[in-house]
Length: 219
Image: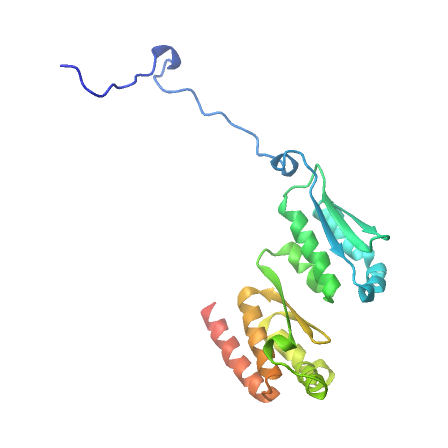
């Protein structure tokens, strides 16, 4: 009686003497430019008017790590006033292009090159931006006082939050930018929001100490 299911057999010619199938082929890993079918990828970062002079002063500090270490081409388009980045044939990883764009963008937001360069080295760093009006609608003197509370005398409050949460904070008028890991950004943002809503600095410090102590225990 013939079975209803036919079993396909491997012809004896395909089997070698040992009775096993041919060895698996070994392929070279694809290079970055081959992943995108050899197409060159671009990123463009606009330069705000107030960051043009600082960019001219420290251009080589931005250019060197991007061109030599990340293997990405970079140039300043003077006519369009923007920094242009593109991949090269020897770019080791396609994600380097986005990392470099984030690094340049961080500098444009007001972060120091020493802090922003961490975006090239570490994967889990982000930048979060928000405005004071997103937290509370303030106008005139009330807005000025809120910005003063965020900075503190001589920037004391800002530095205390930065050191406690291992983040970097830029306060540009009513806009606030925070650079750090996801969990640390959340702690820093909560502290800044408390200050905007009117909490005294002392109360925010004590809450920060409790939260950072809990974080230290967890890791």
